[in-house]
Image 1: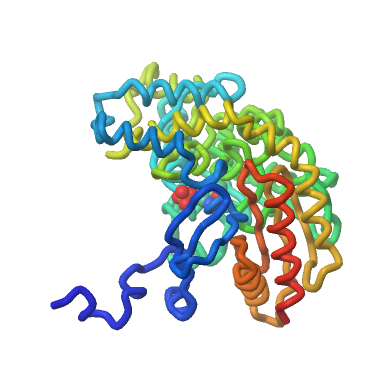
Image 2: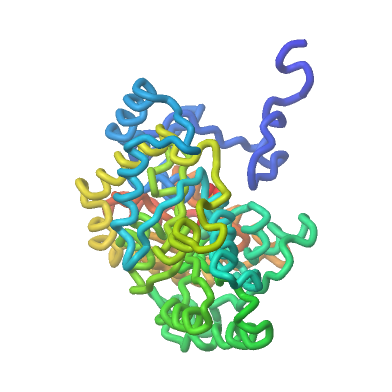
Length: 442
Ligand code: PMP
C-alpha cells in the first residue's frame, strides 16, 4: 500500500486542532518558512505575522540565538529524565523565571503547554488545601468565556461553550463568575474600562457565601481575556479579586499563558496590575515557542505545603516525561536573555500608544462594532451576519490573509497580537490589511 492509497487527500490525514478540516482542505494555508516578522507559504507568498504565531513567538521567528541554543543542546544532551534527575540549566531557567514574579512566587514547575500548566495548577491548588488538612476545599471557580486550554480541568473551569458542550459532565464542583465586559458601556474603550469591578465580582461573593469558603479551593482567571476575543476587565478588577479570595483563604490562579513575557510590556500581568496571585500558569512566550514548553509558578506557601508539609507532603505526585525537556530549557534561557538584551518589553511599552492609536483608527470602518486594546494585543468585534456566528469575522480573517497579514478570528472577534519587536512599519501594515479587509467583505 502506498502512503496515499488509503485516503483521497493527505489533508485528511492530519486531524487539525481547532480547525474545520474540510474548509481548510478547500483553501489550505500552508506555511513553509519563517524568519523574523514573516512566514513564507508553500506558494512563495510572504505573510506578515500579526499574531506572533499563536500569541507565542514574541521575538519573531528563527531568532539566531534560539536556533543556536537548541542545536547546541541537542548535540550536548538530548534528553534526561526529570524524575529524580535534573540538569543544571533547568534550575537556572526556573530561577530566571521566578525572579520576574512578585513576592514569594519562587517555585517553578515545568510543563509542555498551557493546557498542562492549567491542569497542573488546579491539582496544585486542591492538593495544597488537602496537604494543610483542609481536604474539603475542592471547588474551583472560573469565568464565563474563560479559556484555560483543553484538558478536562481546563475546559471545566473554562467558559467557552463549544469547548465544553461535546465532552460530557466535566469536573464536578466548578462554577463560573460573570464575564467582565459590557459592550453597552465599554465599546471602544482604550485600555482598561473604568466601570466598578464589583459589577462583575459581586456574584463571586454570592457564590462564596452559597458554597461556604471551606469548600472552595481556587479561583482561576485570565488577567486579560484572550481567546474569547481580547477583553480587558475594568480597572481594579484583579486587585479586588485578590482581596476577596485572600479574605476567604481561596487561592488565586492567574492564567498568564498569553500575558506572560511581554504582551503587556511587562514580564507578566501580575506586575502590570500590581497583584500577587498564589499560582501562575505560563507557556508560549516562556521560550518563544520553537520547542513546546509551559510552566507553573507557585508561591512559597504552596510549595511548602507539598515539600515541607506535615502530612503526606514529600512531593507533588504529578509530572510529565518532558517536564524541563533540555531543548525547551535551552530555548527558554536563550529567549529570556533576548528579552533583556534586546529591550523587548521596553519596545512594547514605547510603542503601545502607537498601536492603540492604530487599532482605534478602525472605528467607523465597516462592520467594526468595537475595538479593545492593551499592550500589544487588540480585539475587534465584527458585526455578525444574521444568525451566522463568526462567518463575517472569518471572511475578514481570510481577506486580511489575502492582503498578506496573519491575524486570528474567533467567533465574531478579530484578534491582533503583533510580534513584540514590531515597529510602526509592521503595526501600520497589520492595521492597513485589516482596514482593507473590512472594506472588502460583505
Ligand atoms: N490558557 C490560556 C489563557 C491560553 O490562552 C491558552 C492557549 N491560547 C491556554 C491556556 C492553552 O495553551 P496550550 O494551547 O499551549 O495548551
